Image (tube, rainbow, N blue to C red; front, side):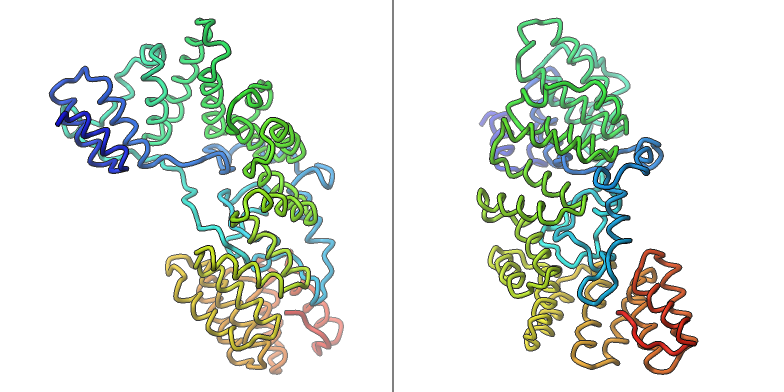
Length: 476
C-alpha cells in the first residue's frame, strides 16, 4: 500500500501521531514531497488546535494599559462599572444576596478566566454545566522527530523564508496554523499572515475570495494574542460581515470586549445576526454581554431564544437554571439541572447545584447523596471546586440545624482555600452565637481583609459594633 495513502487514512481516523510518523518516514525518503509535508503539519496542528474565539485573554493583557482606560465609564456601558454598581446596590437581606465568589450570577464557567471586570472569573460558581475546557494557551512545541536530526525541530522558523511560503497558498495556511497553535510563535505567524495577504492583494483575482478574508481573520487572531487590540478596532472594516462564517464576527466582538467596550461588541454581534440569523454562537455572545452588564432578564430571554434553535445547549440550560435559582424558583431550576443529567453531563458542579435546589425545596433525602456524588466526582487538584462543595455542604448542615457539621464544613473550606471570605464570615457568626465574641470579631475583620466588598461581613461587624459586642442580627 502507498505510504501516503496510509497516512491519509490515519489522518481521517484521527490517529494523528501515527499519521505524523508515517509522513516523517516519507519525507526522509523524499524531502520534496509537499503533500506529505502538508499532511504532517496538519496532523501536528490538529493535536493541539483549539477554538480561541471565546477566550478573552491575550499575551500582553496583564501589562497592557488598554484594559485600564475605561474604569470611569458610565454605568451600563462597561463590565467593570456594572459589577461594582451591582455589588454596591444589592441589599443585604437573606432573600437578595450580593454576587460573591460562591454565589455568582452566571450558570457556567466560561473560557475567559480572569477576564475584564472579574465577572467571568467564577471558578467557585454555584451553577456550572459546561465542562472545563483548556483555556491556557498551548505555547510549547510538540516533541516531534526531525527530518534530518533528532535534536532539531520539525520546522526551524529562523531558517525558513516566510515570504517564499506566503506566495504559495497551499503551504501558507497550514504553516500559519502550525506556527500559531503548535509552536506558539505568534510574531512569526503574524509576519507570515501579513506577507500572505500582500501576495493575495497583488493578485486581483483573489480580491473577493474567501481566502483573503482568512488572512484578515488570521491577522486579527495574532493581534489579539499580542495584545494589540486597538489596531484591530481602529483598522477594521466590514470584512467580518462579508465572510461565510462567524469567525470574523466573534474576533471583532472579542476585541471590543478585551478593551471593555461591551456595547460596541453588542453592535457587532447584532450585525452578525443580520447575516447569520439563528446562529447560537452569536446569540450566546449577546447573552453573556447582557449578563455582564447585570441585565439578567435580557440575558435569560436570549438564552431562551437559543434553546428554541438548539434545545441541547448546555450553557443556555445552566444559565437559565441559575437565574431561576436566584430568583426564588428552585423547583424549576431543579427540573433544568435534572435535564442536564439526562443529557449526560455528570459533573460535580451539576450534582452540587441539584443538592442546593433540593435543599431549597425541602427535599432533604436527596441533599446528602448529591453532595456525596459531587465530592466523589470533584477533581482533587481543583481546590476551588472542592472548597465550593464543602462551603455548600456547610449550608446544608445549617439548614438542618446541625451547627457542628456546618462549622466543620466551613473549616474544611478555609483549609482548602484560605482566601474564602464567605466561609470566614460564616465561622465568625457561629463563633458569636457560641459566645466567642473576640474570635468572631477577628474572623469578621479577616473576612473583610480578604474581600472588602463582602456585604455580610460589613453588616455583621456594624451590628457587633453598634450593640456593644452584642449582635442582634447576623447574615450568613
